[in-house]
Length: 367
Picture 1 (cartoon, one colour):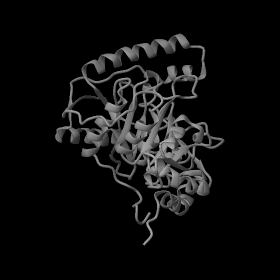
Picture 2 (cartoon, rainbow, N blue to C red; picture 1 turned 45 degrees about the horizontal axis):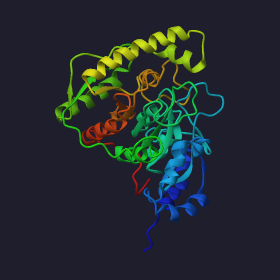
Picture 3 (cartoon, rainbow, N blue to C red; picture 1 turned 180 degrees about the vertical axis):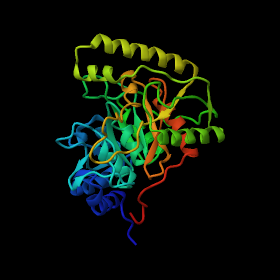
Picture 4 (tube, rainbow, N blue to C red; picture 1 turned 45 degrees about the vertical axis):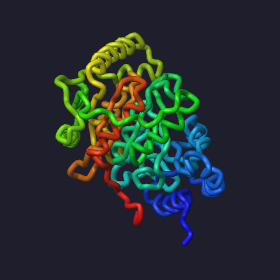
């Protein structure tokens, strides 16, 4: 019996499942199959991956993955025309749907990337995160997402708020990504050694300003309690109370007139975060204040409320599945570490993943 290649399997699942998921804008069948034999001889051994949006194939991360033997199989959906909000996607077959609940959005702007990973179409997909665009869809699709330290990898964003990121089915996939994309930027990032447990952490349900859905917070708090009970985490006394970064983020991203006010908020939050990470290596929060919303939009809620603070501060941040709301929506647990501690954050995430294993909306055999 002939063994089906990883690339052929990925393309078959995309062809079969994407008409209902709408995760991809383009699929590169011939190019991917042609690239695979040579890629198998390289470290990533022909690993199929997806890229975010129409320009994703030109990103630094995609080029580094290809050089290491990854095989890009297609570009994934991002918000389409006519939407002023970013937690949405438009694929080649239509509106991108959440693989857990088709009546809900997958999040965004790395919408299709998260859906492609959650549905086991690819093991990992590239993303970019300027306000939560990797972490939000990863949380709402029940997979792992990483925003790297701002400036660690090249980014075309002139504001400095956006950082490269990855969405993966497991922390191990994100470690493979980071190890290979960092080759030209910094010393190779080997998987971080196991960290001594328990890990000291501070938990904040709202960062001092966000209005969080009580059920979302309860799911995350339950996940944190499981980490404590398993001996993975020790919670330190105190919260993390920041100034609401919304106006500062908007001013910096858009070059608005209140740059002095934005710098003041940014500076004060940096001071508070520096003090926190001086006493604890880890901050835990819900990834989003809300559950996945319907396709009509998020209303008045900022899904970015708990993520964009770390685009302003530059800290690496990751999201792992924490559980589900009663109506079947995935909820994410956000992990934040000190600037430049990306490899250590992934080591921490592995310890968390051992206690909080993910679930999948589509089985690898049946789809």
